Length: 594
Ligand SMILES: [Zn+2]
Image (cartoon, rainbow, N blue to C red; front, side, top):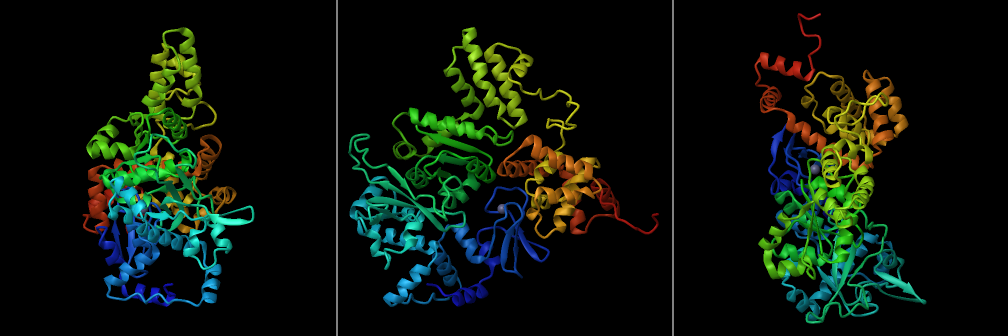
């Protein structure tokens, strides 16, 4: 539809620095511009924009692209809309869409990739919404404005077995089935989504990868009157769409998540949209699946606080328990995970509509912490007034506490469990088989993770999950002269020298570090990650980011001033020497030195 030559022409005329600069505060840093990344939560800038190469790149989260990609990711625009907006900003006109001959159209359609099929379906559904007073009425009845419907690109699938014929010249093409838009049965093809409000699911890059369809209910209908068709129907898993990975509404919520430093996870698409309509923009929804570890790590990277919101009924409590179990290994000491429950019979949509933003946020404020919720649920099932009840309580707590990785959280939980079960902390540690946090390390393996372990060691261990992570560490922050810092600096050097460090598998990595100066400690760290911590890569990466943030925080203000002066070249020779000494970056071969 939009020709490659037009696209290139456009990219030649816009300046990515200017496009990004409209949304992100940038300052010059050498040949590039530097700012706080809009795609992940950070306090120290790692987001660079290159005027020469005309792209942006974030060293923190890997976000990367040109001006079109930036608008798609940042503003949640589709490809075509992003191009239109960019073109308008430089006074270019997007060439008129050329109608094609039926043969040409058919051929193109067959060739067209799944992505454009999805885009076209979305536009079709959006057009159908405008034609359906009933669907519009339904959305209006939910308090949704046309503006918010456009922002979430909401559409309507008509009540027609083959409605998509109106959008695709070849309804029989295999792409429609591959995209999950059309189903086949008894020799016939039919639209999967019929008479439903359509919520496009966008990838982090802003492309349509799936749909969620919700039935229109008669608003005055009795509670749960119609159970014939499921309330929500989602696209099946397709080459574009993997449910356990994606969340609904992330593109639209990104800015609000950053501003609130909080992300709220709800169950339904309509909940996300309704909350946004009423001023709570930081909500996202999982896609008809239970929360996965990937969801949690992904969201914890975006903000410091993760709140799950569930309906107050028994289904809601069950879903909450599953989310809690998934969260245990990923919960960290620095970022709280909390659980909030709505009154019975309410969902976020109905609650925010009837009670408003402030009441909703008050409830978020009262959400239970993960540990409170865990202990609360365990207590419900055991009568702590009897010895049998307390044993049962301990037995149930044991596997759950075993899954908690964050050391401080674990210690707090053990203390609380001990108190409730009326045993001493030492007894609880023994019964729960939890390693006491402050005890000396066991003889073998030589190192275990405990609170005395240095931040440098923690970073080193986790960097082996994805060696390119090491490049994110500013060596200037490694001011200590111990072995861990030395090894970490060496790993940064190794990773920086490789074109694609992540392409190395474990064995290749082991070969590489065998000849390193700190080879012993490096291989111990690698083994520790694989053999003892056994973290999922996603979890290791999330923890790495957290320890990196802690490292950045550790730098005292004075050190920071010193470092900035040295980097800007305005430090006195004494300051410079002090800095170099602190960082262990002594200059070699200075005159007058042996
Ligand atoms: Zn980033």
